[in-house]
Image (cartoon, rainbow over all chains, first blue to last red; front, side):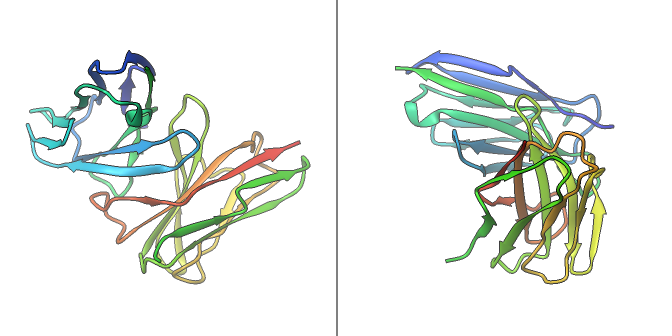
Length: 110
Length: 114
């Protein structure tokens, strides 16, 4: 089946360092969404990207959709302890379903 | 206060027993979903429903069953045919069945089969 590869699986950073997670597909995507799941919690929607080359920002978070619509990234500048959690991408290949990546678990070293 | 509720939060069952997980939403959403979350495997789609009285299998439907008799409710039954049922189960809803609609997730039910 169609898959979305997300890397890295884990990332440990010092507080204040930057963090990036990537999602890659071998097939062109219709759209991609990003979710955050706090430890012990449930996924919460962050943003959706639809257009080729699209870049969106939310405070310290920057989301990008590749020109070929086959990859996406989430970058956090100057991480804080509140950024701890698992970040998931969820992509559509043109059908009704969203396919979730395996997630990147971010831990912050104070 | 609108949202999605799942009950119970923790559930323990003996092997061979069927168990039903509850999911209710008061967001007036047409589409509802069930996902299974295992460590290191992300979220995998079990079943989804885009409208009342209709539902489709997801990627890992074997050993599970659902019903959608009411717009607000989408219960999931984990049957004894499911070989490895211990997992965290997440219910979600969206305005419509399009992949462009964001998912709203419930708090989840952690099922442990002994």
